[in-house]
Length: 411
Image 1 (cartoon, rainbow, N blue to C red):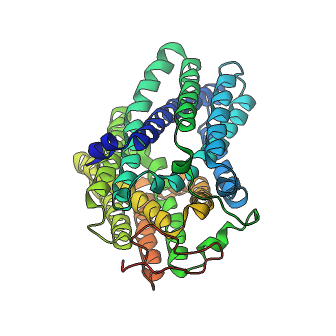
Image 2 (image 1 turned 135 degrees about the vertical axis):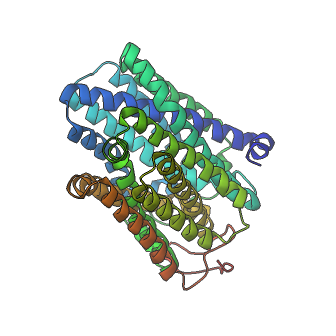
């Protein structure tokens, strides 16, 4: 199904190629940046600083400048973002100090904060409405595949030749992505620019309806669960199962495989299950997987549980994006995704600050049990906010003041 979608739409094929190239470069860059920062500081805390620097632009951009994705020509904004990221990594091949690494990583984070919400907003313009669930799933599968392939390849390059070739490769990926995006039809990336005056920081009003507040709140809460899992993967392997770095690699691999499986599964489910129901069920599957990994004393079963939790996470992401895409017309969708990303990034930042301390104080098993409970709570939050139906088709359901202008079907 996914391959058929890619084969039958040239524009979608170019968009998918842009994402594959860019995501591979991103994971190359992460390994290179983490290795460079650690070599200079020998401190895991500075790795956390690196992650925070990368996330901060998504928070600042989403709450302030996201309307630019709807007010300006979206293709120009996206191409400019990719070019800025490419220039930042060209500079990283020359400037090697810690301050330069963090500053230029922040510039690349700005590029990501522009491009990801913009492409999520544009995706419904590339496919027919009935194909949108599969299109979202394909994009998630591309990201998951890059997560599987990128870090091991980058690790080999960094070990043999240092970080500079990895930075150069990521710079090239930004430029290739910019070229692919610049050749896409303008109307595919943006069908209608917002006619109203740009109102910086007004994006939260888009989520005034209770069901959309439930979605954005639940997804924000869920970020703490994912951060707790990500931070604790190495501790689960080393401390809980005493399997060392080999075990850590297997845990990370199981998570990557689960993300890919969940992405493909979301494409298979499509509209067979109402989007709200699928979203909440995916969160519960993720919670069950994380809880099982924390409880079992069998390492093979733990790997299965980690993969299950990651699969639930990936499916939830696909359906969360689908719900936002179907809730807003194209002229408001960029801002809506900017705010959605900013809320998620805000709680992810808080999670990064708390998760490490929680796992150090209570142990990785207890921390993962807390993470599982948080993921389940996120499902409950979404359910509590589902007094009205989530939309099951693309269309302008809510305007820029959060007023419902069109009804959806039951979820």
